[in-house]
Amino acid sequence: QNSPLTRNLNSSPARRKKEKKMTTPSPPPIPPAPHPPNGHSLALLTALSPTSAPSSHARHTAALSARDAALTSSHDSYGNLCSNFARILGTTSLSSLPPSELTIFQNEDPTSCLQLHHDPTSYLQLRQMAGLLLKNSLVS
Image (cartoon, rainbow, N blue to C red; front, side, top):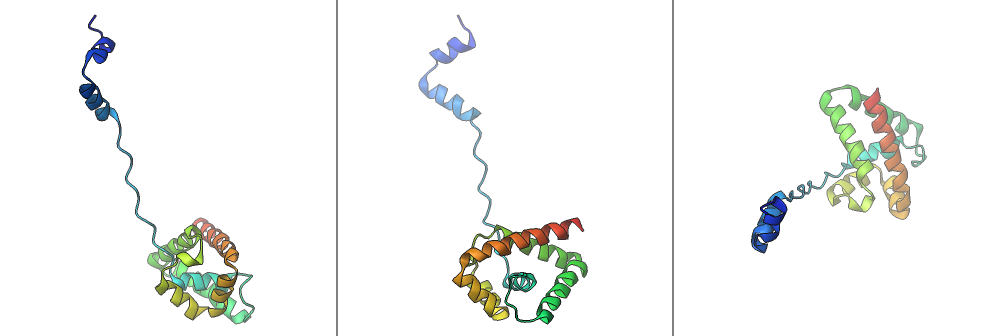
């Protein structure tokens, strides 16, 4: 009786453990944390938002022009804006932004930044809008 099953049963526990280790795949490596969105893109997104501060129609129009320019001027600016929309979509709260990017956002749009600090749940709407703009940017 020298079948593979009998041989496995008759082998030493250390050998069985070694054989088992050889067949067990190692877990995949943990990917690095994604980069956070930049403050400029967040300010652009809040200016494009229909729920942003009703400061002026000119601000919204300028934001539309800036978005269109970023999407059409070069491959780098298109990729940068799409990446930042995806990063905003993947960021769960304003508190997860690095202080340097939060300062940029505060300087460019203090009213929206203050609103987001007072009502953190409204960040979900910005994330949804970022996802919609990302989708539109990728299909057009």
